[in-house]
Picture 1 (cartoon, rainbow, N blue to C red):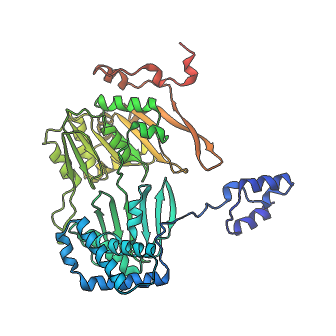
Picture 2: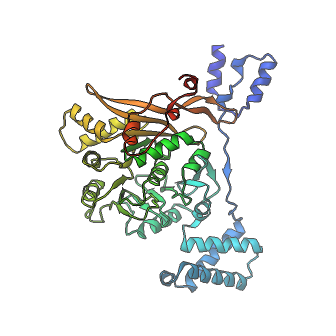
Picture 3: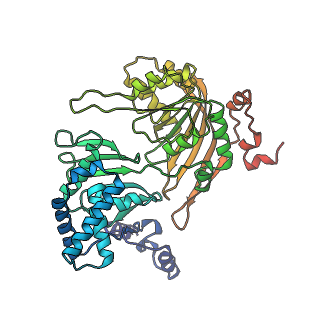
Length: 479
């Protein structure tokens, strides 16, 4: 049997259906010779934009594009409204196609005109992907390889750039519109599109196989707790507790990995802040969409070409304390600003919200310790942990799971210190039970049965939470 398994490991992964394994077992075949269901490679699903042109149509597109550059002064487009500029480009392209009697169909003509317009005014081949609201991430790995994330899953697309230079032109167009530059002396850049989407680009010599770019889409539709419940991110009971936590002015730390939904959760929690409070938001790249009328939005500034003018999150956090905020919302702590955040939380600015990259709630506290150490402050470990334990009240842990869904997997309350250890109590958790037939994660949200100490704190502020929210089913029959 061992030799059979060794041979199977040497083979390329094959696409095997669970039904094939059951058939083999029914026929009495040795299970060692039949791949198991979990060994099957993931299906490669192509995301088609249906914007591919055949060689003749591609040739005509290039010919009309070059003609357009000759007959139209593109520098004048900046003085026109986008709609008017687009109309003029479409008219000229249509006239050029008619004059040359291009041997292409009417539908292909429309596609050629659309691609030329996107090339002049937009982001070229990426425009169809940006127009699809189901696409949450666009990942460009060189001119001939573009992937997207849809519904939490990565998919290869049929989008292609002409060559690396074409891709470089698009990247340069994005960053130059923001007064930034990207070249061999400065080969990586973080930027933001007009709709708020985050862009990271890196070019040779740092990117070995050609320019690479990732676009993190900015959510157009505002999500609320009902949306998160429908998507299976949390339950109505957890949503009610989170609302009480925010209304009760507890300090909340949202933790999770990349793409786990931290900013979305921060947006939802911030929607619970009363409209009569002054909110100051601090972000590296403005993504928060607060609906309250009294919001001051602050954003960091990178250094200019000469390496000057940088304004860090730490400076903005310090400045925000002088702005008379009722709430401070920090998009993400990732450095020395953690110390100023803790100071703010411990000096009367309660009800603050922030996010952090970490795999567990306990790891999140460890990361804050490391960030405080980055400031050069020489706190004793116990004193630093006492600062953290007294500043943060609740840690919410999020996770993007194998089925692509983002779930809240733990809500924990920080109780205080025991010796040199910060003590935490889990209030809600997502208990995994396995994987379903179609790759979905099976499990359920459960209260742990522990009643949080903050229930009494917020009760004194007039916010009552019924005890049965925290009682698991097996406790319901007990008095």
